[in-house]
Each structure stands twice: as structure tokens, then as C-alpha cells.
Image 1 (cartoon, rainbow, N blue to C red):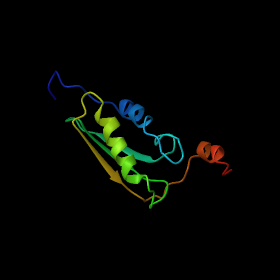
Image 2: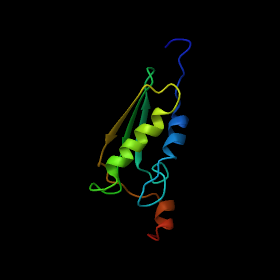
Image 3: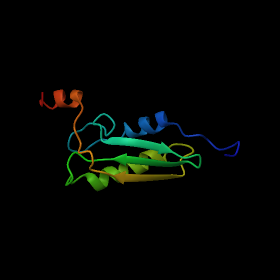
Image 4: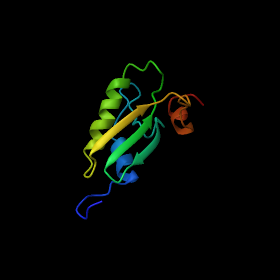
Amino acid sequence: MSEDSVKVTKDQVIEALKQVEDPELFLDVWFLGLIYDIEISDEGVVSIDMTFTTPLCPAGPQLVEDVKFKVSEIEGVNEVKVNVVFDPPWEPPDEVKGMMGMM
């Protein structure tokens, strides 16, 4: 890594993800628990494993594009790779369940 390159942190990526809102639930993808994993290479490549609330989520493609856009705005990010996974299936966190009247 050259001295003038900027090291991207996981916290920066999480803050960017908090700006991506699910258009149906009006909550951000981080709070919803849709992000399963974040890896950042020394070359500024951010790889994100994420899921959708349902496999047939109509907003899925837009969510992926929004995640890529927001994360790519971070200084030092050279590429954003989003891997959509459905294993394990999404399970809303207890706080989300409470907000949605599921508890």
C-alpha cells in the first residue's frame, strides 16, 4: 500500500450502508440486518455479502445499486462487490420485529 493511499475502515462502510434505505420498510439495510459480511482489501476493494427481506424482493436490484453507490463514495474505495446470498434466510433483528409488530 503506498503512503498516499487511504485505508478504508469497516466503520466507514457501515456508516455508508446506514444511508441505504429499504424502499418498502423505510429502514436502512444495516439496521435491518441485511448485511452479513464486509471485507476490505488493501487495494480498496470492498466486498459485501447481503441478503433481501425475501428472495423475490422487488427492490433488490435497486438496493444492490444503492449499496454500491454509497460505499463507492468513500475515499479510498476503488471497487465495490456485492454478493447477494439467501443462506441463511433473513431473520429480522428483535428491534426490527418490535417496530414491525412481530413480537
